[in-house]
Image (cartoon, rainbow over the protein chains, first blue to last red):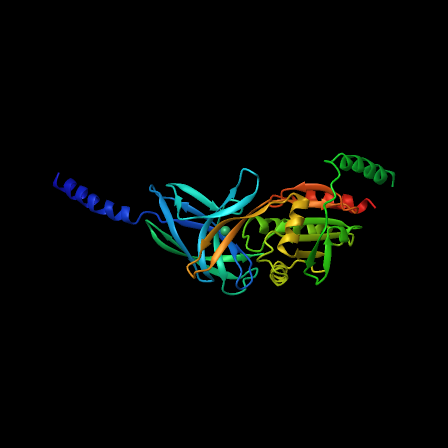
Length: 141
Length: 190
Ligand SMILES: [Cu+2]
């Protein structure tokens, strides 16, 4: 019995630690369109949340652009297409969110150097729950 | 030989049955080749793939250009085909901006024109094609700069040698193989 208690209390101590180290967000297939120095461009990637709790991307930055935002592509009732910034992007528990053309993108303003096919650019995604992620995106096309 | 003639006849019937004859009114535009065009009438005699983009567009327009490059790979050798890309944002898209854009995208300079002009002339061309482009949303960047977004029609048009619109479809979802076949059909129809 005493031994069982020890095991149980041990388990109780371990569990909160495990909870703190919840599976972090995972990222796949990050890429961006080529761009001239000073221009704008769009970046795309897939975000996977394997954990039991939702997480939220609250800010984005890039090492190769002056300013970055999360944008969503919209279709108006007259059929025209446009984009709007969104303040944050929720990644629900056990969900995959794709930033892909015609849907969601990272908008990079004032690209600081010419980005051509095969170049790389670092992007930082800050999440509400699991810290900041640094990702290398490949320039495509 | 007969098969080809028959194919052209049938094709002609099918194409003829498209929505009514529409020849867009022309306005003067400047091309990235340094010339001024009455667009689109100055390109008559050739089959013209017309698209509308703006360089601050990171998504829809780039998809369109990407698909059109795939079309170009299939039909670009045909000197009777011209690609013409008109800005949706003449206030920001100067000739120089369009030239840089063409360079980044490696658009073939010989027969792929990017065109801009005065706001009034570019808007007249939009109207002639039934294309909408409107400033929709403005925000201030941390550096104080004000930027605007453009809500716009997502469409490409195919003009035959007489300058008549023969096809209009969404650009960002373009099926390059199918579209190239359509362009070729009009290029053959001399
Ligand atoms: Cu955007």
